[in-house]
Image 1: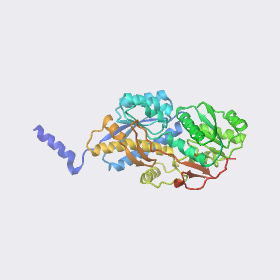
Image 2: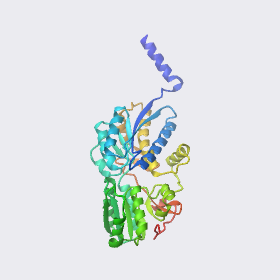
Image 3: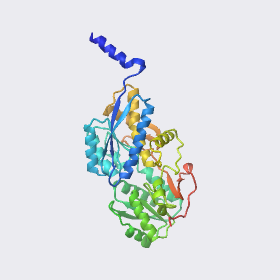
Amino acid sequence: MSSLLALGAVALCLQGGTVSAEEFTIGVDLPLTGHFAKQGIGQQRGINIAVEAFKEASGGKDSIKLITIDNESQPAKSVAAVEKLASQGVVAITGGYGSNVVGPASEAANKLQVPYVSSGAIANSLTKRGLKYYFQILNTDGYSKPVIELIRSLKVKTVSLVYSTAESTSQLAKDAQKGLSDAGMKVFMHEYEPSTTNFTPIVNKVRLQDKPDILLMVGYQNEEIGILRATKLLKPKLKAVVGTYEVAVPEMVTENPDLVQNVFGLSLLSFPAEFPTPDGKKFAAIHRTLYPKQDFGYIEEYGYAGAKVVFDAILKATANGQKVTHDSLRDIIAKTDMDTVLGKIRFDAGGLNTEYMQHIGQIQGKKVVIVWPDDQATGKMVYPGLPW
C-alpha cells in the first residue's frame, strides 16, 4: 500500500512532464547606509535584475528568495550579517562593497562554509588567503592597467597620485605607481585617510611642489568630488585630471557638471549607455522594466554579474539533478566560465576572476565617452582638457 501511495505522489509531481518548483534562499550582504550606501543601493538594483533573469532562464519553474542585510558600510556589521544569513539557511551569499569590509565578511563565510561571491571588492590579496568558499568577480589589475595605459598614451613626464589609505585604493595606487614609474614617469604620492573631507592642503602641495602634468585620484566618489572641488578652487597647472572609481558615471554628469568636464575615469559604460552583448541586452531590457527612471550604472552591473554567477550555478545544479548545497554550489562556481555584461568571468584557483578589465571614459558635455581601449571607443578624447 505504501508503495502505491509513493508511486501516486511521484505521478502527481511529474504530471505534465514537470517537477515541483523550488525556492532558493540567497543572502545579500550590502552597505545600504553609511559611506558606501550609494554603491550598495546600486548593487541591490543589479541583484534584483539578476533575479528576474533567473526567472526567465528557469522558465518560471524555480524562484529566488533574497534575504538582504544592511552592513552599514562597517566590517564588523558585515561579519554579523554573514553569520545571521548563514543561520537563516541561505545557500550562498553575494554582494559586499569595499575590500576592507568584504575581507572579514568573507573570512566569516568561509569559516561557516557558505559560498560568498563578492561583487564589490577588488583587492587581489583577498583571494590569496586560501579561502575555499570565497570568489571575487573584480580584480586590481582590471583597474590599474587601464589607468596606466591611458596615462602612458598621453606621453607625459610627471604624475601626482592622490589616494586613500583604504585597502583596495591603496593597492591600486601602488600598482599604478609601479606601472607609471616603469614607463619612465616621475610619480609624486600623496595619501589621505578615508575620513578626510578637506583636500585643499594636498592639492596645494600638488600645485606648489609637484607641478605635475597629470593629477591621478585613487579614491571613492565622495572623496574624488572633494579633490575636484579643491582642484577647481586652486587651479594647478595640469594637462588632465584622471579619476578611478565612479567619476565617469551618469550621476556625476548630472549632479556635478561644473566639476567633471573633461575628467577621465574608469567606466564600463558610455552615457547614454550602449549594450552590444547578449547578456548586456538582457540586463538593459530588465533594467528598463524595473527601473525606468534610473540611469544605467556599472555598479549595477557588478551586482548583477555577481548574483548571476550564483544563480547560474543553481541552474546548472538543478539541470544535472544535483541537490543545491553549499558544497555543490561552491564546486560549480569554481568552474565558472561565462560571458556577462562585465565580460568573461573565470576564476583562478584562489577564487579571483582574472578576466575582468575596466574601460576609460571621459566626461564631455552631457556625455560619458569611452576613449580606451581603442576597439571599445565611442569617441575621441579631449586632451589637454580640464574642468575649468
